[in-house]
Image 1 (tube, rainbow, N blue to C red):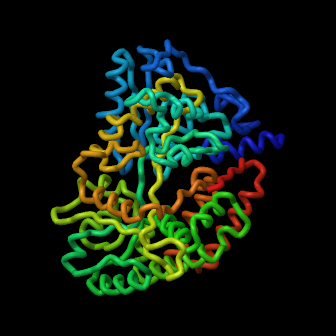
Image 2 (tube, one colour):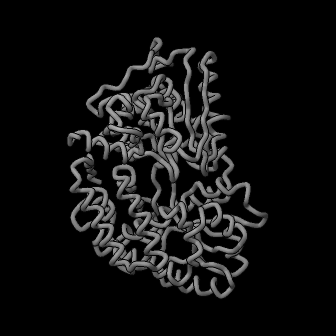
Length: 478
């Protein structure tokens, strides 16, 4: 087997497409199995109709559009009851095929391998596909035409000019946009405002206050802090990374993304890991490692868990479980040291929830137009109404009646001002590194390794990724 075949096998494994043929002479998938030979192969050109200012991508009026949605915290009503009907209204003769799943990679791996891909994908959840690997294989459509297209609401403006700053940049791979991050996500610690008011508890601003409050909460027989180790350890590593950035500045996260030497063993990362490990050891039952996110979230709704780390989709995900008298509130991660470079109010608010358009889809013009409709005021406002989550479309939430949790998110965003913790790109760039971080986060938080060991293990994995010539390297400057 040639080195090229081996490199291809490594790449397919990262996407999740490696398959061995049973019987004598079995081997890895050939180039034709994925419908192309990597990023040197030009994307297939789907049939197009006539273009116009109202139909900039030339969508065929009677074409079929297949949409695959991750049915997680956002559900899929926003697609079936809003965005798909918007597309159907514009193209009445179109046929829309809708697929909803919580297992994106498991559902789509065989289809990418056979070349039978959908036209639009919400690539999210625990079982998401590796976007960077897909792009390297020539499987993703570049979205520059989408962002440069005329806005639905104001054709004199490009779509990119109607979005919150930084939206396009969060979806860059090799310097070009391949991912549409649609939801404006704020991360922090969630709690029940009514419970805290009843007990007279004040949300903490630093870790000393955090631990003191956790002692009071524990004395009441309530678990002070918890996350789901079985499927959502990334909820916790977000908190560790946010704390590290608040201690040392956003350059800490930029260095991690760029696989800089010693990025994981830097002092801010060690301090953040140590602070959170202490919380895990003293205030979180080890049984949480065996639970999934909805189980821990239900415990919080039942008054059994005080603080829970998550993003701003949480309230919508739990809307059917929220009991009377429970009210979601959110605070930023507490300050770890008095010398933190960023204030307590600093919060990570970034464009998240990635959507992609397969380059080899049968209706790529339809996928682009579907995304353009999502990025209209109607598409974005309706999304917020149905999911309780804000979008990256500037001003789309104006005039809406917001839920308590969403109001709390806006208050946190307002208090943060310009003190925003930057996004992390390694999660999408280097899936193997992200997978290792999930594993080591659990080991740290459930007391199997120290903060120093956590940092050393993550640095070793980052160094291995850096040395692996089969992995395409990325870079960011800010």
